[in-house]
Length: 133
Image 1 (tube, rainbow, N blue to C red):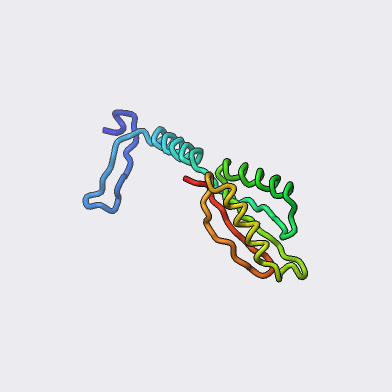
Image 2: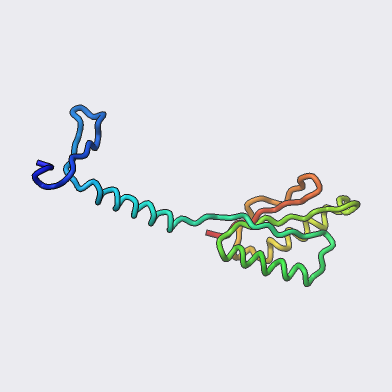
């Protein structure tokens, strides 16, 4: 029947009893399948983690500049990792770093959620923000 119709006989479920076969144009089937896979890859959103580095002695205008970058990253749909590196004796003033991170999170709370609260890891305090769904 498949030869008469100029089509292929494709074994769909070989492990079934009895095995299930189907008469179809196999080349066209593979082409459509690859198109579907390509379309699904196109619709996928790859989420990247962008890092913004701060210091405990950061000035007001620098905070505003960094804040613009954070908003731009969140608008694009990327996660943002805010990190503050403490150098030398700055490690004794962790409260300043936590205050800066909390302020940054407060400024962008309309467009982001806090994925990870500020936490000290070695000499760095890290906080991760993700865009709101």
